[in-house]
Image (cartoon, rainbow, N blue to C red; front, side, top):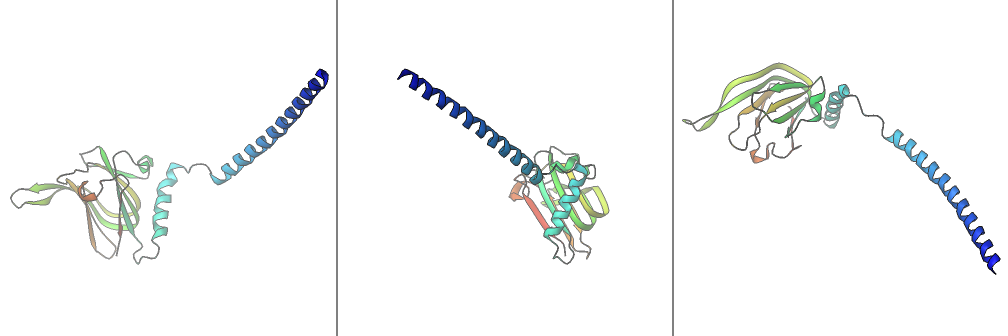
Length: 191
């Protein structure tokens, strides 16, 4: 009786070892398959030089039905946006800083201005103070403005024109939901 129990135990142990070996081969094959599929589905990260072109192409593809086919997307960030690391990105420093405004231009805009603002106590209105930066024409470009998005009185604004001459402006501020939430996008389709 004791011998038969011992033989049964040895046979069970051999079956267990054989099963584990076969299971290990199945797992190894499955892991190798998953790794190769993962590599095919997730190609290497694009070089940073191509990042701006991809962002601009994506924005243009979304808006290919527009007459002017030019769009401007403006987003606020409390830390550096990814596009700031691209050598093709224009980075403007306004003198006030700590926050960032990303302007993605897909198409062409004209007479781009970054202007400082001041509060006129006598008239009780915001007035343009100084021209910080001017570009006659901007095409398929990302612009990062190192600035401050105040909750109170704004200190800067952007102005530009479409190819038809229609004027646009955007006041840089946090209040009213303008840029208050990181990644909040303001979208302009130009006429």
